[in-house]
Image (cartoon, helix red, strand yellow):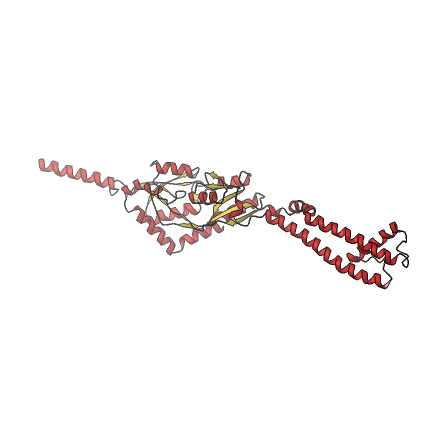
Length: 367
């Protein structure tokens, strides 16, 4: 009788062990979450989530034979808070593989590799306002000096031409006042190559003088024109963002990404941390930020959205061109199934090998 009791107890203990290990009592269901993003995934009418991140995980779970309950956090900090407090087993986006995070999480192979891209408002596309502002170039010191030389040139050569032509040209009056005006008008016609023909030098030496006026005037006009064009071009360059270094002192919206934040602070930018990519874009759209940081893979999506919202934008590249996005797995989940990380990695390897990951990226990001 005692032997029977021992056997029954051992069988019960074995049943409890098997149930706890998932062999008996059903497979473990993992609590999986991703921060909300209209670009990377969205909820359809049937209640299912579709998009790059959702489809990547759905395929990983299918190939790994994993059961899960999918949650959507309103932003990255919410997902992180639940994950590090033990309320989530897996987070698909937003937790970076840093030394500090590795105390709580293990990370899969990257399923998404991207560079840092910065979306900025392109003020130059408002050409009318730009050109109106650039008209102030006419008041620059060098242009004003050139204009003064121009006036002096007209006056000096007007006097010389009046002296030569005052007796023989009926079109240039003999009195100094009126005659000087006629001669200066003639010099202006010659210099600007207008050539109305109403006042024409008739004496030989006056015509030789006209050639000199024409040559010197041509040089003067070109110098003044070059200075004005240079001022216009300089104004354009001042208002053009050509690299990340030109964002010094600007307000830049970014998600809570340590590498991006440290890079922007290094160049002297004012970092505005947002809860997610959509919030980053809203900061740019509403004018609360001068620029917004995105991954290269999705920046084109937000650039298109900006165009639809009536914004003129341009994209510039950050210094570091690699951002690795991995699946974060809570270490407590590995206690339930030590092979969980291997299962996920094998699924990702297969998806890389058969091109399914490339297909998903092309499907959602190119679209």
